[in-house]
Amino acid sequence: MNQASKVLCSSLIGSTVEWYEFFIYGTAASLVFDKLFFPEFDSVVGTLLALSTFAIAFVARPIGGVVVGHFGDRLGRKSMLVLTLTMMGAATFAIGVLPTYHQIGVAASILLVLIRLVQGFSLGGEYGGAVLMSVEHAQKRRRGLFGAVVNTGAGWGLLLANLVFLIVSQLPDQQFQAWGWRVPFLLSAVLVAIGLFIRLRLGESPDFEAARQSGEVAKVPVVEVLRKHAGLAVLMCLAYLCAGVTFYVGTVFSLSYGTGQLGVSKSTMLWLVIAVNVLTIITIPLFGALSDRVDRKLIFLVGIVGMAVLPYAWFGLLGTKSFGLMLVGFLILFVPYAANYGVMPTFFAHIFPVSVRYTGMSIGYTLGTVLGSGLAPVIATFLLHRAGGWPAIAVYMSAAGVLSFVAALFLRERKDAERDVPAAVS
Image (cartoon, rainbow, N blue to C red; front, side, top):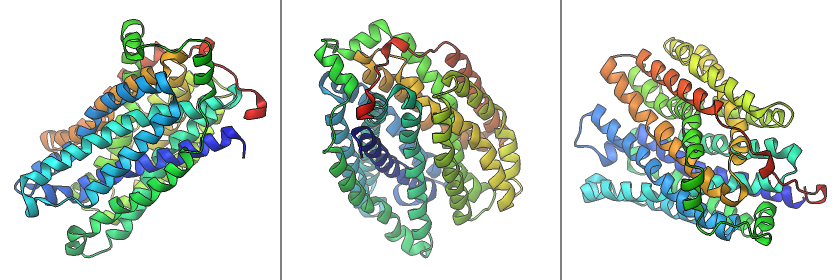
């Protein structure tokens, strides 16, 4: 296996581990954390509070993106990726051994929030580095594919998280709430060990090495981004909104909506999410490879249009409570998501010059996750109970699509920022 392929495998495995650990929290927050950490509130408020702890990690993601991105542009991509994976692993394992509200009172809720902030900081610094390590090691004609493969890490992570929860959810409710929910968090220690073993054996990014040798490394990357490229960061943030809202409404909010509002079983909803993740794992690389031959921006925009108009059909099909029709709803919503998300990493990677690429991409992307991803389940839950039905949520998803489409129109790839890698190392 050549160096580029090793880097791609490393980024994919590391990204999968990070997202697995992130998503098991979201699943637990939807299914059980309201009872374990916020039992003094009624079911609606408890669910909102549990999902709010899921969302709070997204507040820490831009901080992680700025700090880790700064040192990634100054010192290199590899060391920062080792750091972020270690932090995420330690935080996730800590949740697995955390006492509940019934054991230590409100201190349990506070500790949960603090650990969740560490997870957010870690993931904020992880994404940009994982994408850049793969894209910057690839030849120009394969950068779309390499970036897309890394982005399947979210699908693999969520698939793995839901499979583990599907197994432990077969336990009687009393056992699941007593100790079963801890198993997915404790298992993360094994995955982190595998990820660290692979990452420690990698070389540095060719683009970063070239920039360092030519003296192009920025002294204070975050200042340069804010002074010269702040507009690009804002546009990238807005361009991401639609994908974030679609994904987190479809995979996190849908669990509580399906089980609580529609009366569908936990296992049925988890199987639907698992099925749609299989779809995205297959189709995201296909769209990434297509973007090496067809304009990435065009694919990105078409994906946004699909995500903006299809939530109405998705909700309608969910309302049938028929597994087959609900599955069709998930599939038609997530095909345009796969198109958009499949080309996003390579498209976003080439927005900023290489000297501030890690910092700029991390700031723009993580700010988008705060507005689009982290708040989506909370906003959707609020709209459901305030408006009394799903149409308000569908309008919210469409509005995110309009904002993303307009913002993406003003973004373009910097062709001068690409450095091709000799075929011998790719």
